[in-house]
Image (tube, rainbow, N blue to C red; front, side, top):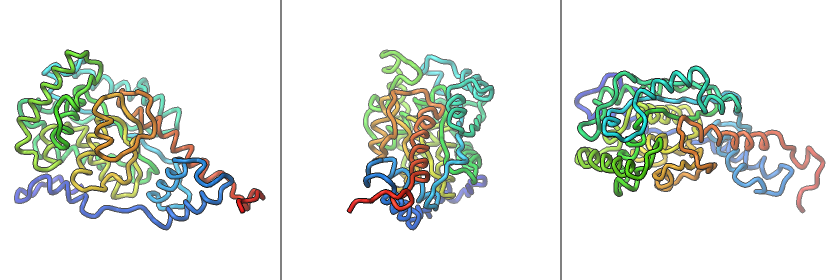
Length: 344
């Protein structure tokens, strides 16, 4: 990402947007070959439903008739938020760093799921000792800080991976995500605000008031999605946006996690429609704003298990669906190979 040295004659967000000027596309030849194979496997056409579509989607982005899931990586970005000073979470911001250590020790839910599914997990803490500024009072990040976080996310992507699973950790980040969605997509703050890590009804109402105050403060300046990200987001949200863009440039398909992760994805998609064609929504979170956000982005979640943990857990569970799609696509016999009569 060419964002390290910002040209002061150009708006900072224009540097980030340049990454989206020339979007890579899926390999149509590979897609068509994969679809042709599906039509000749020992099953009625379409009998495996979305599994068939998923296999062909992977084939296009991996540029191969036979997609592989040998090298799958999960990136969990962690950031701290100054808005926690407004009482928007029942947990203190110190939990972010403590959970990062828990990830590293293998004790978190995402660690168990990655172990179960053979996913390589990397955790990327982002300046945790220096929380973003309280978004209800000032922009979350400077231009340089936001650009650095985007670049950090892009740089964390393993160019050799077959699939990227994205997740996050950050006390207060559902507040930032709600404010970002409200600024970019409109609606009331209450439309986007939920319990996060477990607020009661009064806590959610107080959180919505903070979101509304933040959006009112910054909305006059949020003419571009990346500027909305800088003012209302967080370092981990910016890093996820950077990772999504980097994955696109490298033809790497992506599984998105829940509300916060999808809010990060909103930024490139709002800047350049089609920027998320290489991404799938792993699951539908129980966080109320997530379904509204997925609908706005035209993303259909693979699973709905009422999860709302974050960490990439929903996307990791959804990965099992992709494993099934690839296993059946590559492993099933064709009618000819199996000596089975095809339809007349």
